[in-house]
Image (tube, rainbow, N blue to C red; front, side, top):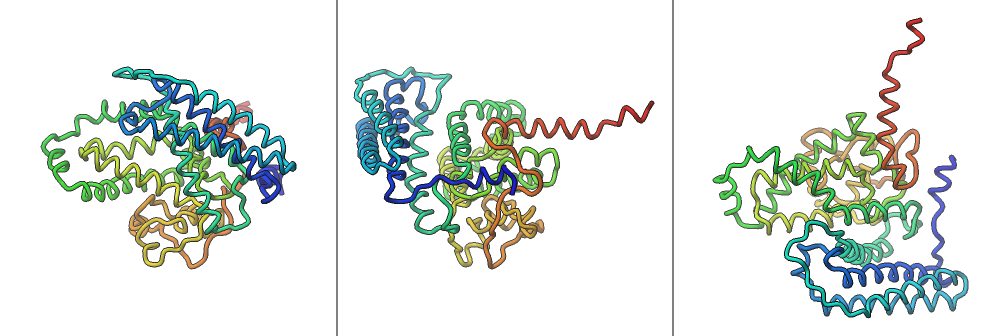
Length: 386
């Protein structure tokens, strides 16, 4: 076993009764509490303008202090257990800072138009909700019961999660603006009005069908075109599948997927209600199909992409290479000969061949370094001309 595998298979010990679980919860809730409190203190810089009208400040502040309270309780318990006293102390310190920041009164009026914001509220709320849903789900119905919640590589995936949520403006700059600038000539106003006049539920289905078709071919290209695979390999580098692994996507792939997904929506003119419903559904579904759950879904498993379907796409076993490209509708894999769904579940994940580097920064640089090596390999040997 290589040093790389040995390091990645070392998991965080969260044995119940030793204070590590409570200590980890205290640290996590303390950090989220600080970020939530900062959103109250600096809403003009840290919150997402589109979400502001949906917020109830009173309820959110109660949630904030409830989370801080739990952080205190978990931290105190961890300290009392003694096995991981340092975790509990860090959690208590973080929750204390969060309490101080959260108690500061601020009545800041948001500017009418904001061109720059961080979207920290989006990160905090999404991470909290998803963790509350998927961590218990993976503990109750695990596909791999031996896999830990804080498994190897989880900190790297959390950084990807952070970037994808705080980098909304950056991603939009590389997707929405180019699409509107270069493809505006394809818009037919009369056709868009016809599309928008349909029931929202029908538009929702149409978005799924159209977008999944474009992303199927983009996904397949990422596997079958060597230089594109260098980008997509980052997503496949995780050795253990869970809800957080879905976030491990290289920036260039995020931009490509968002651009191709946005184009048909922009050109066809679906209503905002249908688009928002699609975005919420697909975002949750993309996380679910990566989750460490053992659900099989009889009949449905052949019609819609399930965790079983997508786990086979992520396996490093020979029979699972370059199959199941569809994000939501396996009919495309059936039509184009890439469908595979046996009775058993896969056992291994990751890429085949040389392992990818560890860490967020090294993985970001990985495709660029690989392209440089590919170019160097194609150059003729200078010594052959002498």
